[in-house]
Amino acid sequence: MGLDAKRSLEDYLRSMHKSMSGKGFGGKLDGEDKEKINEALKDGRTWIDSNPDAGPEEIKEKQTEVEAICSPIISSYYGDSGGGGGDSERDSSEDGSSGEEEADSSEL
Image: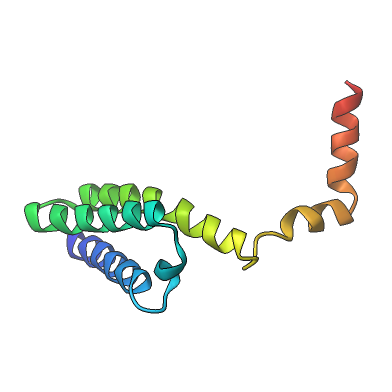
């Protein structure tokens, strides 16, 4: 089990590193966001190297920590570029349920 968790973290770090270099979205991020992601990836790699005997829960916790830094930045990139997610508000208001709920809550 610990080996699977370690492999999962290593795969995530490798995939993010690849996305950050070359023609991935890394070239389109501003310097501060790119630096945050690169620092998180470096920290994850250093942690793996420094904790070879870590258990699966510790490894999963570290992966969650790295993802907590990277995911919001990546999500905002895709949201800002119109790559999905932007239609969810429009879709919910088109069926009327969202608009009715908002009207009901404003009447209270």
